Image 1 (spheres, rainbow, N blue to C red):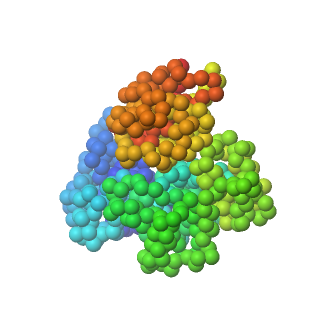
Image 2 (spheres, one colour):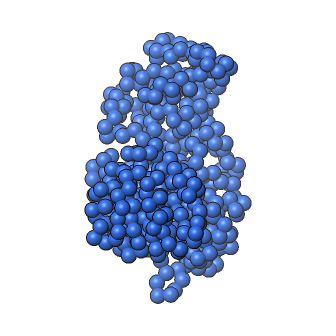
Image 3 (cartoon, one colour):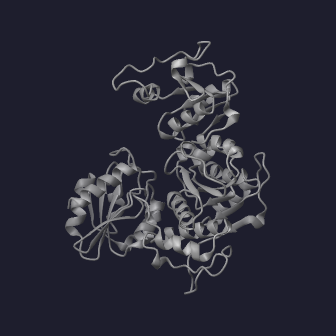
Length: 480
């Protein structure tokens, strides 16, 4: 795991004990810190406090009040010590920081006001990683953000580096928690997918390459309008001291807003304008090939050779990855090999099965209309399964591709609303649940069609998360 001597002897509070929270607790304890931890889920608390030497079913060490003078020795892990207690009832005087899960809504949760009462900063695990960097072997960091495409671009950059023989690790909003992984050797590259929530909790991450893919309205319940959301993304650039930036599909007023926000310093110099590699709309025009200028040698677009990178959105993702790897010093042949062999990610235009010449595609990660639109564009004859918890009340971003849709099959809370929107344009079946929708779409699909789960909605009305929704779709398709 990643540790730091600067945390030794300091007190930290950790709120949220899911994967990143558990990794944060372990890294802090291994560094010799004193940790106060809490989760509203009792099972998460018991899992944390259960002593490794106890038999299954034994009573775990008792939860201890943080007011005790000495932190209990039976809860020592590594060189640090652990107390499990509700942070909101704790005097935080003298604490170095409160580390919260990115899922905690700071604009509504009382932890922000409670920490502010004692002058304690609220940060995330990415900020702890940034603090630990000085003690790691020499390395570089790539930070990737955007409303859509973050996971694919992060995994693609990681894959290209790995196939080129560069020591690399991906983390942040993808894969294993960054603090729980072993440090890379000299010359390694950490590739981080960063949500706006994670950026909000980070203050000193100086990325060697910072990537912004796009910005469209999302998560507005956490921000003061769209400008607040854009400002959150822009902070990734503001934290840069010396690195380069890659900006892709951000145009018009949003681009102007981003640039104006970028130039408002937050305590670190902004990067010079000539270090911004602005790719714009990375699409071939007039039969010409697009060549990123940062790559040694010619690197023409060859999307037809990249089976797991279809659709206009994946061309943008590939453009960002190509530019990033070029900045990191890779050559065109190394990048091309990575693009050709990239296997793709689950739930992101994942090819599940072909049955009776009908392709079934799992795009459960498409949780808004902007991320669904490119999937519709990628396939000429679609049986579209959509719906769930709507983030917006329209499908305007998808409208240019309605001609590709032969029928729509709606599910979830937004099913009726989306059905009303789509009926003037295509046949619609209100299915309610995913199992009914899969059977409905399969029953009308013809040879050459694609049955596409691309919901344009969050999943929480019927599923644990988008992975659960995609896994369910995969099982249903495999059972056909």
